[in-house]
Image (cartoon, rainbow over all chains, first blue to last red; front, side, top):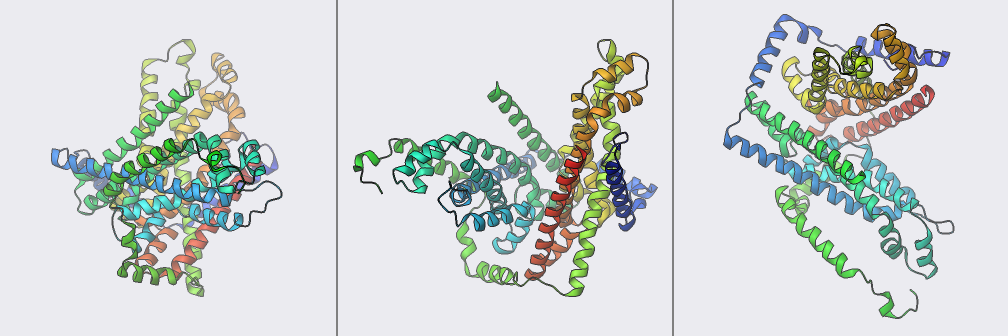
Length: 264
Length: 276
């Protein structure tokens, strides 16, 4: 799978290719895949019916308005989640960053550990856990996005703080200014554009994540999708899926156009 | 603090910063309304009781022998779903990528690509856009309806979404390789597959392989998430445990998941450096 034919020149590559093949073989052998469930004539028929129902999306004005509302909720979840995460990351980036030589950074290790844990758990798993505490609805989704994203942004921000040119910060430290103010008046002005671009990039990701987050009950388009799919209303489900595609492609196009406009 | 006079310590930029902060807060307000954002709801008695009990069980994690065996089995299934899905995705992506690579087009050698070939290429690219713009979680939800709960839906969901992604990126990598060798081969009458094997792959193979390995790593992460909609593996077990409010089981599975992702990350980094 991983090594296309023609590259396995050394024994090492051959070994990697063999291991990959063995992994693929073991995977297919150990999963009880129901090939007949999607390749048999019966299954193909039901899949065909399923697809045919799907081709008639419900485009009634009242329903479209509700889909639009859910899309707005998805956007709001992603925006607020990203904003909360950016605020948390701004607070955490200072303790998570390495300090210049003589100063110790006692909080660095524990804060990094927390950031890694926040980042390691996917948004959807956070959402499923938060549902237990916060109940169904978009708030659980927003908090889930915020938790995962603060792990990502916290680390990126801390790295930006570490990599900023040290001159201005050094000048302030020599005057006995405290670390928080050094960040505010020396480091942040330098790295603000970089931080903003990280936030925008994560927002783009979060819009994509927020569309599907609702399938566990955390609001937005995803929740609507599961609701109508559960009632076997295929036309309405199709409309929601279309709205998801439009949202995701629209964000892709917009970010592509913005990037090109900014780079030029 | 220093002994400088207070006037020197005043922030010259504070009106702007204050205004920007106030504007940001004002913009956040409608968002809070739209998302029903009310964090104090987390602090009412019922939420605190349920949440406290759930989180309180996280430590110590569940370590019964039966349960650990179950987790090990489900972890392997997660890896197997990701690997099988990647394999099917690869089978889907390679023909799509080859069809949509202009560098392998014979008719494009003499100016514009022939019309049927161009139409086929456009069709393949459109198919890949549709495949990858539907998130794998949505594919899995729909497929669970068709093939039932279990790993089959997960494998197919990964195959469809990743097929679209791999096809697009493979085509891009092939297009960005030095086209001269393939062009020379095609001009002299060699077949397209020979031109691919001897003209493009020698340049592009390491990059193709390393991207595939990276995607395999992503597939492991997403196969856990797919479990939450009934596509089998560790995610489905985690979902069950959360619904039963069994915090100790959830915490064990979270630890196993984090370890699995870290392991896949290390393995994929090592493989990619070995393949370059």
